[in-house]
Amino acid sequence: MTDLDTKIKKFVQLILDAKNIIALTGAGMGTESGIADFRSPGTGLWEKVNPDEFASIHSYVSDTKKNLDFMLEMGMNIFKAKPNKGHKALTMLQKLGKLTGILTQNIDRLHQKARSKNVVELHGTAYEAICMGCSNVYPITIMIDQVMSGKASPSCDVCNGLLKPNAIFFGEPLRSETLSKADKMIEACDLLIALGSSLLVYPVAFYPRKAISLGAKLAIINIQDTDMDYNAEIVIHDKIGDVLPLIVDIVKSELKQDK
Image (cartoon, rainbow, N blue to C red; front, side, top):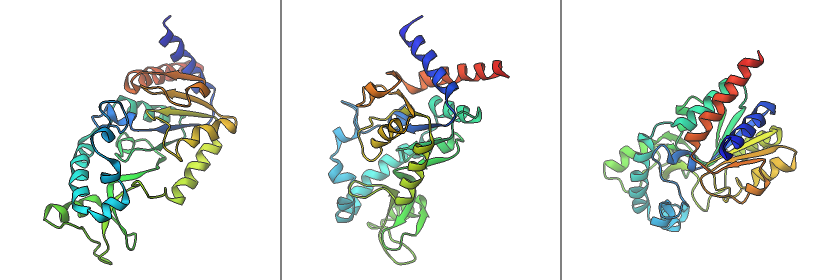
């Protein structure tokens, strides 16, 4: 039995033993669908552009057109993306009754496209626009249509305020109602599975620590090391789409045998 086989076996047992599992997913979940992540050495988005210039709320307001040109290019990549084997494996784990919900840092809605339920979008979504004046929410197509027609600063048809993608920019806090949902899920879980997250960005980086402090176990699948590896019951440094489906298939088989 290889080291990976041993880790997969232990991962499966953690899932089988758990009563309330939450998945926490980061940008590494989307890279296998062709969406660039942010911090991978050599390929991360923030190595190509300065996030202070292209992803902060202050830069968006001060130079909306420059930011929108960049965001539209990135957005088209997101809109074309399809769920990968990792997303589908989480949906299967949910259908098996072993996954309660998903906390995601991603704005791509690939979990929903894979038909997962109870998904909390911690950093918002690329599929909506929101007015910075009255907080009215629109489909992102409303905003894109304005930009494509030559409007440098897309505006709300209710109050004429500036529209922005309904995602969390640098300099913006996470929404209180979102944090409240996430806190309740973390407080109730007995196993947190972190997938494709560097676990560096707060407040999300706090969730594994909080879960462990409340008695939950932590399992991680991520290409690179994370600061929480030493606190996890099991860590697999591999592609999510290669490993997670294998784990879920074994869980499914074990559950059938128990019936």
